[in-house]
Image 1 (cartoon, helix red, strand yellow):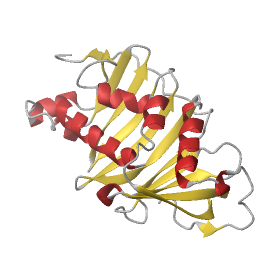
Image 2 (cartoon, helix red, strand yellow; image 1 turned 90 degrees about the horizontal axis):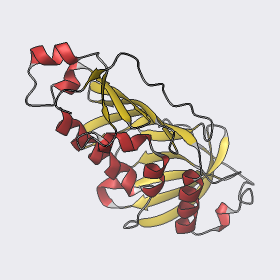
Image 3 (cartoon, rainbow, N blue to C red; image 1 turned 180 degrees about the horizontal axis):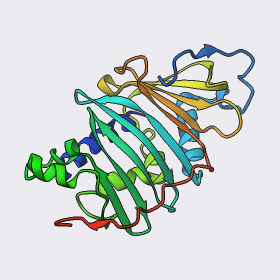
Image 4 (cartoon, rainbow, N blue to C red; image 1 turned 120 degrees about the vertical axis):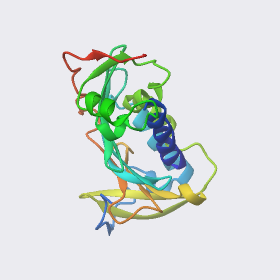
Length: 238
């Protein structure tokens, strides 16, 4: 879980280089037997969640969380080898991106382009709102492109380092979940894992976020990736 917030730091670095959701959860009763995760250790529950996520053909991830004094907002679709993309926002600025085959498409606003010290305001205004195309392996963009890959999220769900504690089961968005808290300093947070059916991770709630901060994962095996935009320009210096 700590790597979900660590992933946000990767995203912030990538942006500069180129240029809860769960409130109201209530305790649930009688759900401990649903899929067996309630009887497992917190480490095993998290491992099972990562395994379930890795086998998903697609999912949607949306929400916001703090990172290095900024607020990162995500609204993404990730797939297993079938492309993906969405929107990424950072303190008022942001971009849309699409991964389709070997190509990477992006459309940023003026604030996004101004993150690049070589771009002045006039150039940023000119670039804003236009779709550009390059390769998904572009060194400056690969760290963003990986956000459209199921493998990235499943591998970064948890890599150890923090103390895991399993809490009581709750109802989240109408479904029973198991809460596993990761105590790891600045990146501490709680992962909510489905207590029925496959143990998908359904939300991540950072300890240092506000009441509406967190990431919600949904639409497992049914999320549709965005289509590649037509008429995109070749990205300058790509």
